[in-house]
Length: 246
Image (cartoon, rainbow, N blue to C red; front, top):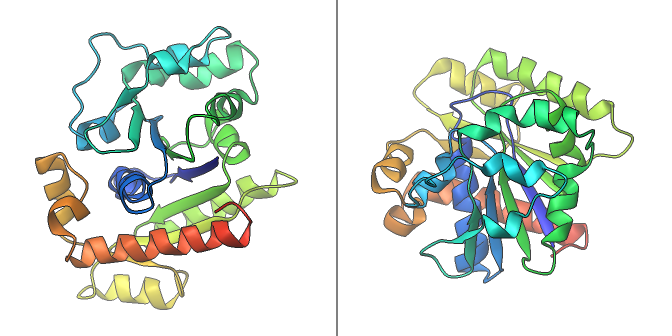
């Protein structure tokens, strides 16, 4: 089983759209038994996969000492793709993890599902605290979407500093999201701090994913947005092969 964390310290960077795209490609293109675990209190992944919110907000319960994640997992309408949904109760996650002194709780939950899935894609909340520490420890690869902004260089430095606190950490694949070739600052970012990064173009297709409640390639596989995410997904799979986790 391989865990891919889609994480950013900034919100509004297309993180959830990218996580859902990865999960769909792992399940529908590669045929992997895949789960997307939504750790964001907004529950955006479930919305994009056309899942109705649960009647009770209980996503936080999986972090208890007697948590049972399998009871909360639901199937999506796509073959091989299940979901561990998020909800507003996850706002309590940082406090809960400290309260139960569970420094490896996210990792343990992933390992407990290793016989059920080949890939777990985590849609992570934009924060730097005990949750982000566990995200780093419990991932095989971290995908880090950042917009083409001067503040993104600072965000990348913050993530590198966080990683430096860990003796061993997973490889990080940064990606320039929401890129618009018409904007000078965007071009400067691509030629500067983001040189060589994969690029996801800015377009309306990400918004359409929310409107249609479906992964972009299911309705616009020909689009630049879908092609950009496909290239990134291919790069991640290639990295996993190099690591012997294909």
